[in-house]
Image 1 (cartoon, helix red, strand yellow):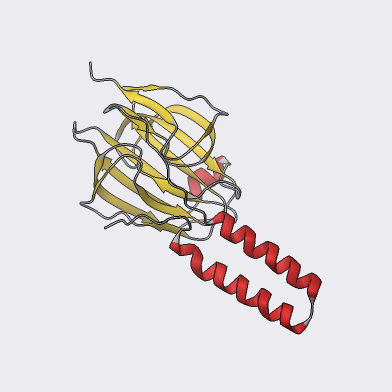
Image 2 (tube, rainbow, N blue to C red):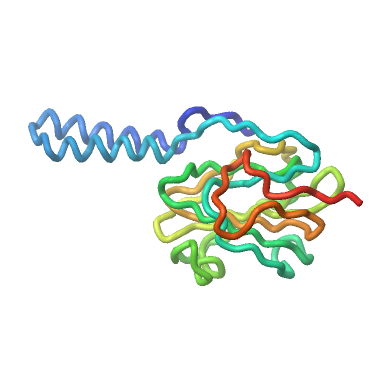
Length: 216
């Protein structure tokens, strides 16, 4: 069961608490400059783990972005790892200033969750895409279209969090996980989708329309 987390993702609580406690102790000791830096760090961590509400666009055929960030590539590939068919692969890079809570792009059922350990290269590189740690959520839509949302760890990201489990029925825009401190999300979607985004475009999870399923 995935529950809403607003306005801060619960995975951030320990980091915020530790930074805040350390800052208070340093301030009590009297190291004002260091305490100021600690306060700034605490504020940044709080900002990083923010989890704002989003309003999904209407329409049964709408596919939305699973992540905040920048579209770094769109390509046609044969995906032999997740959905086993010809797809569009849309890669979205999240820097440390983006919201890192990820959302389901389309109403679907979770068929499988695949976690694979790996390296921690920069997430916006080809080496990172091929060798980094990842967690893939394989989905089936009500019309039996298959897609995959793959959380990929980055140079600083050392923890992928996925709340989705096999058998879950998830709604478009619903939160399903996050990645800590810089990362990317790769979305594998059928080529029957009419894409509405281009490489270099900035997107917002749960709000930006990536495309539309073509039913004819």
